[in-house]
Length: 323
Ligand code: HEC
Ligand code: HEC
Ligand code: HEC
Ligand code: HEC
Ligand code: HEC
Ligand code: HEC
Ligand code: HEC
Image (cartoon, rainbow, N blue to C red):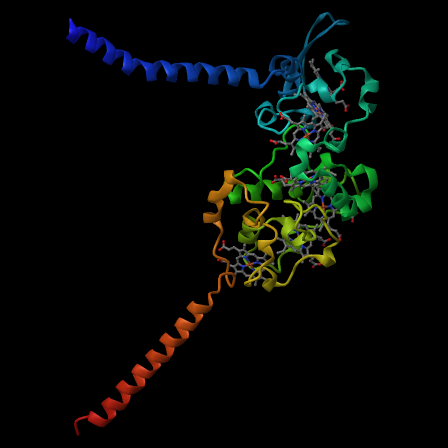
């Protein structure tokens, strides 16, 4: 009897963690489905805007019609649900009149929200320093040359922008992500010419002075060389005229490399986030960037010792040479 009771208690003890694990799983599952509150509503838009083709019922012809979606109007739903604004319904930012199709032609004139309409003066986002970013942006060459046409959305795609520098543990992924933002215009004439009729200068040619350019574009961001350094925001936004760009190798390849203030800034106090502490391991060994005084001294001493050794050896061999 006692033995049976013991085994029952033992089994019970064994089952408790299992039960707990099961409950956690259920809780997590519920979280996953409730994360995207508007997923179903958004599907009403994404059934057309998420695909290359869309279908609609044509009342005049009284039949279904299949057409191609304008590629610039396609919203990638996978990217959308990873983006900063993944918890949004499409009609939080667009008028609900878009629920009707064909869309009313006048809707294209609908004014769009700006970042600051939602983020301005909101303490929740204080750590992102929206106000400072905005004023840096207004000083930038893009904004000063193109007035209101150049908006924040030009770099921050409304349907896919997600923070990377702050959260991504892989430095090279952040570099690629950030550079692709610039290259979306500077390597794509169609977006570039939305703003200007100028020819788009070939980035590869204008940067041919950089040795091993491919490696440099993989190891640093465009903004390292093209923005004014500051120490109060994580991502500098003041893109400057080309004659102010960094060209001198020693600005990076030296002990007080500017990269400490830019790309590797997250290591500094105030910008060190626990979630990406591992990234310190990934900082590449920059030529000229990691000089150590003691190491330099040691190598000089070793050099002198070796030289001394060789000369003593040579002298001894000359003296002791059998005649
Ligand atoms: C039946 C397919 C279909 C559905 C459903 C649909 N759209 Fe569209 N949408 C289109 C097509 C086609 C265009 C481009 C031609 C046009 O404007 O009619 C378009 C254009 C747009 C534009 C760009 C307008 C412009 O010219 O700048 C926006 C914004 C838009 N849709 C938002 C939405 C939103 C938000 C929803 C959901 C509430 C939605 N659409 C649902 C097919 C659809
Ligand atoms: C955070 C606000 C926001 C949300 C959420 C949002 N949009 Fe947009 N959308 C914009 C802005 C801003 C633009 C204009 C972009 C520009 O001017 O470059 C835009 C443009 C568009 C366009 C026209 C394409 C273009 O480049 O002009 C379509 C189509 C569109 N949105 C569909 C959608 C659909 C579908 C959803 C939901 C899955 C959605 N949007 C959710 C802000 C939003
Ligand atoms: C319609 C209002 C609205 C607009 C417009 C808007 N945002 Fe947001 N944004 C929000 C809200 C609300 C959140 C919080 C979302 C959440 O917690 O799910 C947010 C979150 C963010 C975050 C934090 C993401 C994170 O993971 O902590 C960043 C960064 C951000 N937005 C940048 C921008 C930028 C840049 C623009 C303009 C290009 C912009 N937002 C436009 C409302 C907006
Ligand atoms: C020329 C391109 C460009 C323009 C224009 C631009 N940004 Fe950015 N922004 C970037 C890049 C690149 C990043 C880095 C993205 C990353 O890795 O997280 C960034 C990051 C940010 C962040 C996140 C910073 C952090 O601390 O994590 C915010 C917030 C932001 N931008 C707001 C804005 C606002 C507001 C505007 C308009 C006033 C704007 N941006 C205009 C390129 C741009
Ligand atoms: C190592 C520093 C460095 C990096 C990294 C860098 N640039 Fe540059 N960039 C320069 C310098 C210096 C010039 C000026 C060259 C000249 O005037 O001959 C320049 C020129 C330019 C110009 C003006 C070209 C013209 O002739 O009008 C553009 C546009 C540009 N860069 C964009 C970018 C983009 C986009 C990236 C990222 C993919 C990038 N740069 C990365 C240093 C850099
Ligand atoms: C929406 C398109 C677009 C994006 C995104 C963009 N640029 Fe530009 N950029 C332009 C245009 C257009 C010009 C030409 C300005 C002019 O001379 O009228 C320009 C000019 C420049 C210049 C040259 C200024 C000069 O002195 O001639 C530099 C440098 C530059 N951009 C760097 C960047 C960097 C760095 C990024 C990413 C953070 C970036 N751009 C993102 C459109 C863009
Ligand atoms: C914006 C900062 C920056 C500037 C300016 C810069 N570099 Fe670099 N350079 C780097 C980084 C980061 C690496 C990558 C280190 C690594 O991954 O090994 C690198 C790598 C190199 C390498 C190693 C390439 C290889 O094949 O392994 C050489 C050589 C080099 N740079 C030379 C130069 C010269 C010469 C200049 C001036 C014309 C210059 N760099 C300007 C940041 C810079």
